[in-house]
Image 1 (spheres, rainbow, N blue to C red):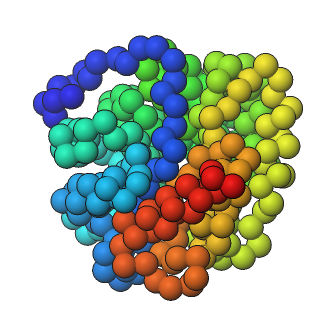
Image 2 (cartoon, one colour):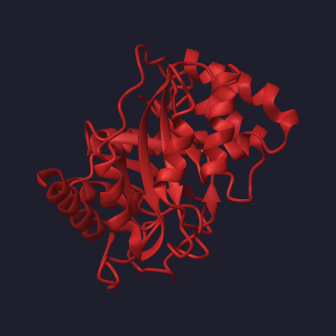
Length: 274
């Protein structure tokens, strides 16, 4: 895709499967003060993508920052970074975020996604639907994405989110019969402390008769590796990296994102053999 092309081609066909192991190298909130190896600039992100692919990641979840290092949603900036990554890590699954992070309205999020029309984007349903009155515009967006070749991975932060998502599917507010899901265990503030058991998320999905799911887990704090292994044993995929955890399973601080990916990749491979 060209950085000067304002109308990127529509990808047709079914949803692309989620990658086995996606790296989320920075997120919207952490910076160099949290870890000196956390990628902030586009150059940092490209270098992290290369290192993490070598370490075992086959996908990357992208956040970009402004000149001050703050979270940014900008279609032209995203498109330029995607162009660089398509050359630097050909074949890697490239997913942009639409996260509000307290800076953007749902309309601004939708406007960015419509302008960029990315192949893969993560979208928090609770950000698209902040009150019941938001459903008409949110539903129109989800239908636009489905008809425009934009694969939406729905971010569901807790079992209540999953329940609301299933209700929306059954009501026809979100189109399709097969869906990409991101389940989230833990929080930025508390890490893995108080994390909700994975079964409480998955039981809600069982209500969605005639629907299928390609689902992934991300988990905050030092329980990240163990949580991702547990998800893999249940048929889920994994997202790891400094957005969610800076620490290895033994409590030591990781040197960089690639180190986290190496640990998680090895743990997932071990789990697959047992």
